[in-house]
Length: 324
Image (cartoon, rainbow, N blue to C red):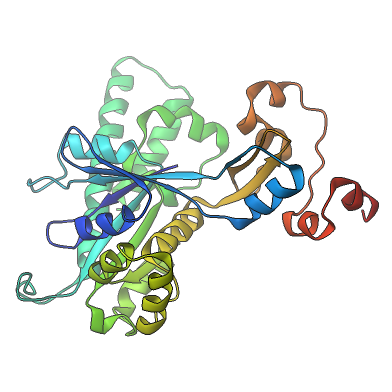
């Protein structure tokens, strides 16, 4: 899974990104000078399963975070849009703090306005793409499934509604998948606040805007999270408790990303490896098998599925089958 980390100048995006890349994660800088880091999602169940199966390897889920620069133009530049369209989920960092280096703008901080502006830019970019395609198809006298879905998209975008809120069938999504519409990408909002505001409610109107759109919202202090990321695991636990923070930023963002993508995890095991996989909630076993290997989906007959905690309680496949 690839997660974009996006935000306007001065919101603390780079600070948050450094917090994500702290510790033992693989971090690098791309050719464009922007950060890339891969986080292996910790899950102690994998090691418990490996002990039962005597597996040689444990392969957790990997999530790659990429830093996306907003550019310095009024609208999102083509390069930024291309990078946005290359991620599975877009994390939008919003500013909820001010200090000596970053004073509040004239009129005060307004993360809701900031979010709506970004969302509007994504909508406009999709509208231009869809409308241009419709005009070309009209000249060619084409009236196929793609033309129909694009008209649905344009009708939605004209109302300033992002395409992630347009219900499409699996076939309709397949027809327009090549466009990789930016406003169709799931969002995760991060409100970056000052250290003293961590326990405050923040901006209720932002929570309402996120809730009404079905978008997860995380509130944190990127500066504090960067400090935490540089500590040892033992010191991190002490610091988090002292600050009243329940989970570090990377865990909050991972949870938020899974929620936004509607992902769940399943695991496979044998004596070679125990591996974690992701699928969308509601995926049938047939398509889950295809995640492992396409041949498994083609030749699928049936699958035995056991809740992980139940299997760990039983301690073996034989006992799990005996208990039903």
